[in-house]
Length: 511
Image 1 (cartoon, rainbow, N blue to C red):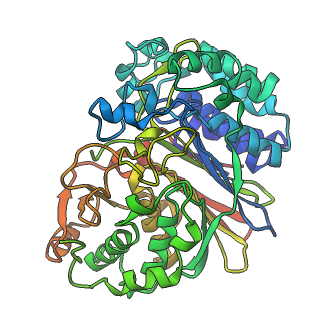
Image 2 (spheres, rainbow, N blue to C red; image 1 turned 135 degrees about the vertical axis):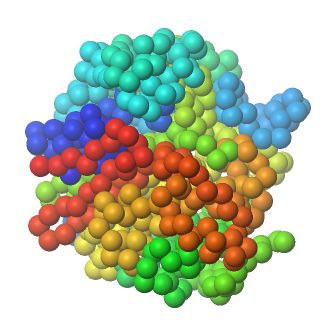
């Protein structure tokens, strides 16, 4: 089974498995098609994280996130008056993209069929065309006028045929020549020109994909795995451990259910901006002795005072499981929408703005500087039983809210025993900064947050949360602002999957 936010990508992953590929091949094939059809959320100019499970083995984690260029200079930005990294239109917020290195690392370690076969569906869609999805049609005008954005001039209405010949050339080069043909070829040459000193050739020749030790915690009656820092995945594990020791009501519609999950997420993350950086010790961040006082601080009848742009994201998640129960949870991202809204003009590949995660505070552990990885929102997750048998593969887009959405899904499935489709479709809350409309700022005010409620959340959540002291905003729609989750659950002899209806064009496909 494959779950993805675009049905063309999900079908490409399934076709790859039918042709002899495994879950890793399917993940790369799906991700590559998404890089073609879903540039408004992801692409080869972004980053990639993954968690991989093979039956009888400890899960493995892949960090393929890019580093800033050798020319990164925080003093110059501060001298220009910047207090935070420029979100769009500035190449300095563009780390060297790690996505392609992630594909190659995943395929090299686990792939069962040739790389050119895996990438061929994506190449064909780029060369011959694909229909614009609802979310692409709604956002294409943002970049259609920009250099490198010409392909999207035809994408401004649903179903329009979109061709991306530059991306087709890049995929063909990767299939035949590997990383050197991409990072040292047409795309890499263009990136060096755009950088005008921000990057050196050695920045592009250094592989960006690292196999790293995953983080794991036993909580909610299961074993939950994710990627370590610079990923914020530890927040999913920390919040799950905290809520696992609380007296959740039996009914998710109960306002106390929402309150306790919100408080667990707040307690897990209020100091995120101070502790999350590429050298952070993820295992230390989820130690019981660190989290126990945070659990103890939670009150059932009141939101704890902690020191008394909510916007659509640029990320996709996908899940694959094969007949041998090998599984991949993969997340690929531009950071915000079309990223920095800068394209490498020859290939038309838009570049991420993941550098917005850097700090411009002098001596901050996540300060912008040469060849550093920024704090990352990408948080793939995988659940096994306590004896390490595959149970659930899941992931979501959503920026800062990714761990919050995953927490809600985990609690609904593991504690509430809800079917996958019901859990994915259920109304959600996400937390935002009540004072700052700029993206990726949820935790800038510590634990002081606004609770954003989706339209289909229970009506009694509003009064129940407000009476406990939460600042609440009720939204009128169920939409992509509350994440695009993908989930596959393993049962005896069968798979149960769901792709988020908020994505409008996704699919859970299998055979």
